[in-house]
Amino acid sequence: MTTAAHRPATLEDVARVAGVSRSTASRVIAGTGFASPAARELVAAAVDQLGYVPNPAARALVHGGGVRMVVAVLGASAAVLDDPYAHRVVGSAARVCTPAGVGVALHWLPLNDPGGLARLDDRSVCGVILVNTTEELLDSVPRSLRGRVVSIGVGSAGVPSFDVDNVAGSEAVLRHLYATGRRRIAMVAGPGWLPCAQRPVETYRRLMRQAGMPERVLPGDFTAACGRAAADVALRQWPDVDAIYAISDDTALGVIAGLRDAGVRVPGDVAVAGFDDIPLAGLTAPALTTASHPVGRIAAAAATALLDGRPTAPVTLFPSALVARASA
Image 1 (cartoon, rainbow, N blue to C red):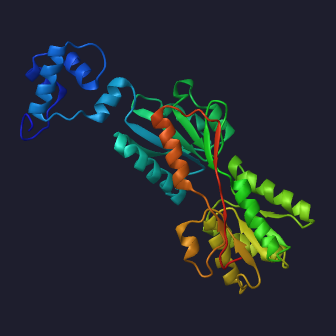
Image 2 (spheres, helix red, strand yellow):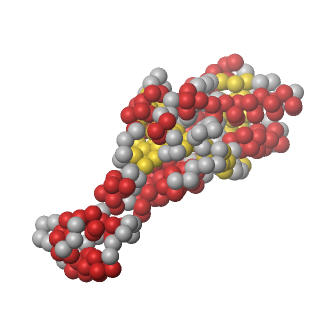
């Protein structure tokens, strides 16, 4: 039952019915601090009588635990908030946080204002998951937020990192292209300011040098529009190109569209591969060869570490595997 038809019982109601102070009722319900056996019985009886259910948000605020987790995404513009990758991180974090009574919020950190993290330092925040992390952003983490921040992308001594092993994933894709006879492979990279996007580029350059093959890298930004434009540039700069690897499935799908616009057959003339294995990758024509990216598991692990208060491992890498399909 409730104390009135329009509202649930409160801690004050429990204390009043039990005939004890609010602090005593709080200690009994929370299971912390001293309370006499008689007081415990009175409070327990009042809780049963009133049907009192502790409010997890109120308790978290009282104990300083916070009631929301923030997924803070670094980007050049607010358009980064529309990125499906960010939405997958939020969704996976919410699956972990909701049973704990913690909400999840999405926040944009402007690329030219890494100091914006200071605005997230308040008692309502139990933790922050950084996405698209840079060294500058890590350096700007307020001391008071240390221990409540984890990173997806790059970490430091004070900020643990959870990420995909995109070096191994990229190497698997590139070796697959080589094994299928491709020798003039171009690559569409990610944003130059993003450290985690540079690892696949380094992997590509290393493998091309080892095989004695030309290095052909085009700039990118993870979007399909960029991939479409990159296909046009690749065909004009390197007419003999026989494969294009993009480190984003969205970009790779844009590449396929650009090649189709130019009358180039995929994979007959040019093979195409991506990275992420997004749901759409297996539904296109041709289906996209790619490498797996367990975004859900990564985000869930990051959120769990924050909720448990144990984000200590400096780097946790999740494996990536080749997903071979018709495009390459």
